Length: 264
Image 1: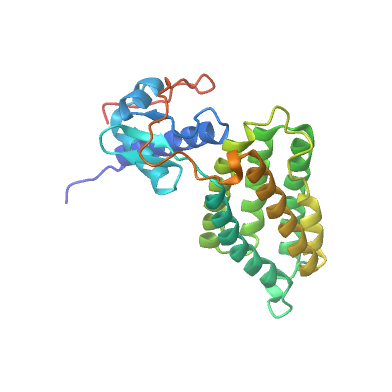
Image 2: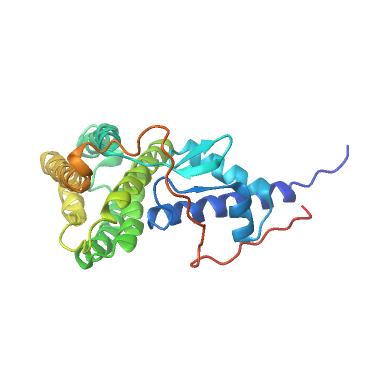
């Protein structure tokens, strides 16, 4: 039987993920704005890599709802509106309600907050929450996004279900992309960013599900009110169907060129 080396596949797969992560960070930071268009070649040239992993990364981000693919013009950043945000909140609430119920249900002893593994995990989540709160109070949106995503990913991991954790993480990434597209209209976000992460952990640790629900409901209401207030007319429909936003050159000054072994 002939030998088989999977190193080429691993290298390309790793590069594909690097590119996808870098582009997602650009969208989350607001440097790639809604409706902005680009091609596979532009991204490949910018990062100094070949086209194949770039195309695969862009297809991955399209499947996650962050990009729209256009057969003739390449890709563009998806523009989210208020209706999209409401849908995200509804989906996210269904997931978190189930999580909170499981964590506070006495019949699931392995998920009780006083069980050592769970208690240790919640303590770690609380530390992420403290960092998120500091960033929120300082108005540091990009820092807040990083800690908030880690906060919810680690909270989801408490339940030991990787499918639930991944699904919630994807929802929260989409939520932040939508929020960033609106938050960039604020001259100063201080005092406008949600910062009750530790209160939520404390409620779950004490098995106070009513308090946990109230906290997340205030979270959703605060963000929805902010998005509605920052959307022209409150309609939040995004660009008109068929409209073409101005094309801007792609520049990613914060990222080094990625390594790509083109001989693979």
